[in-house]
Image (cartoon, one colour):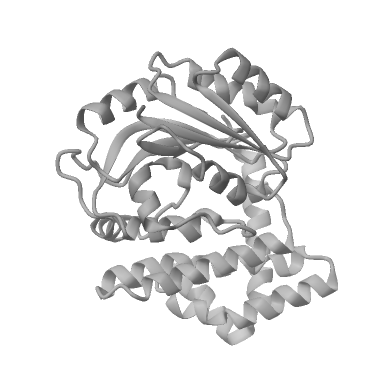
Length: 338
């Protein structure tokens, strides 16, 4: 068997059938799906059981107490999976038609890399779809190291996305690293994937659209404003800066740390969005504690924000960013046409 697909399930009943249909629509049988029901309180468990009953040779259901996304993914990783490779699929997303047919054939014939990156589409209500392909097309016969891959990506684009669902990862390689998703934290992909890729000796690409990501879903982590989300965002970015401090090549290190430092400015408007005085104080203390993150900012407009923070403080900079965000949102509402 080629691929084991891990799907964490939690209160996404309206999206499950679309997700499952995108899998079973493929002709290949060289895959298995591990459905990890993370204590759903909607009808998700029942929908999952129906697809298991219909396709018992391809779907397995595991029920556990709620522990969060990282916990559900780790639970799937720890199972006796039959696939040579692991893949993550979120239940509100879906696969491109025929992708599993293509990738299972490709990996069975040529698969020798430890990690593959593929393309994806971001769907967001009221906005144009955005298409993302891997930063480079790497010949499967001549894979590069994760270090080389990221170095090229940062030199060309100055940034990189860490979503774990845009990769296919060799199970044996994953297990040898001893790494797992950090439980109890949001933005867990940012904590895991940089470590995993930097340890990768053979990385290649599948230069096609494979994954459809649903952005802006009500109730999703990225759409829910909480103090925990903001603190975890800062934590993950600061860990990224710390990880890449070990890189000896100055340009690569500087570009990577600059990218992580951007998160600091994205959190500043939350000082005004957080209405609870005590929680706002906690966020303020954490922002002051991690203020050194701005020292890694080197890009143009963000260097201006860095100077504003240094001269006028985090609240003033946060206010300016909040105003800019609201004007941008208003502009999208007034002028966007699909």
